[in-house]
Length: 285
Ligand code: PAF
Image 1 (cartoon, rainbow, N blue to C red):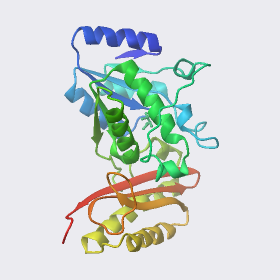
Image 2 (cartoon, rainbow, N blue to C red):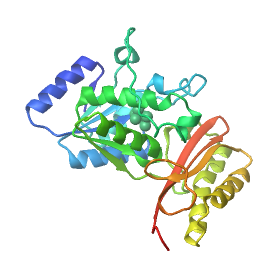
Image 3 (cartoon, rainbow, N blue to C red):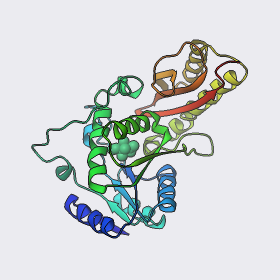
Image 4 (cartoon, helix red, strand yellow):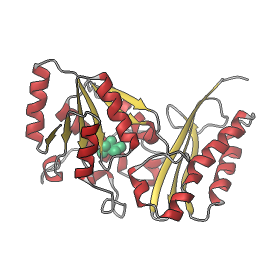
């Protein structure tokens, strides 16, 4: 596996790959790999000639006071894991080369970024879309792989790619979970042992909501209450948001039907975790 740390060397490498008609698969990450990242790498390796994985903890997608400083990092561990997954190139640029002193551009997607995580993390999605645009321009992938745990991020990036005619296919991949249902996340490593136990409440509350919907409940307000009560039964959990919205445009709904997203963000101790469930129900029953 080749490790590239400068933007210029990555651009040169991409030129060589394009000249030899290699199809590039791309997995953008902030590192500290877990099974979710590894599954994205597997999809890319399977579907492309060359797989590039970027590791860049993007400072502009963290609000002041968020966990940028304690975001887990271990490049040597990441290199080892990516190599074992048959990744061809790991791209690890420095913040100074991604954002030199006179950097002045912001890429922003409207509407889709306003609710859910966008409401509690102002500026977050502008940071994501700006860095992803830069990474797409540098790596010029044919396909790029994102996890559905960050469902809002996935939809925002799909919208951006469509609106800006960026020539890449954005592929959304399934959420990977621990045996007890907790969605894998780099942030899970920051959970102390009691918090790790408590974190199970995210998935448990989503599963509980699904049971009620499967049993016929269609009132989003009732389901929201049930989810919130369930989360509040866990003393270490503090709700950031729980929302039930249309799965395409994230607008509020007054009846659970069609494509529905149940999304939540919960703080367990100091660690903010997100999870979601996407349901497709028959429109009329
Ligand atoms: O999902 C992530 O890890 C990040 O938001 C991304 C897409 C790599 C952009 O920094």
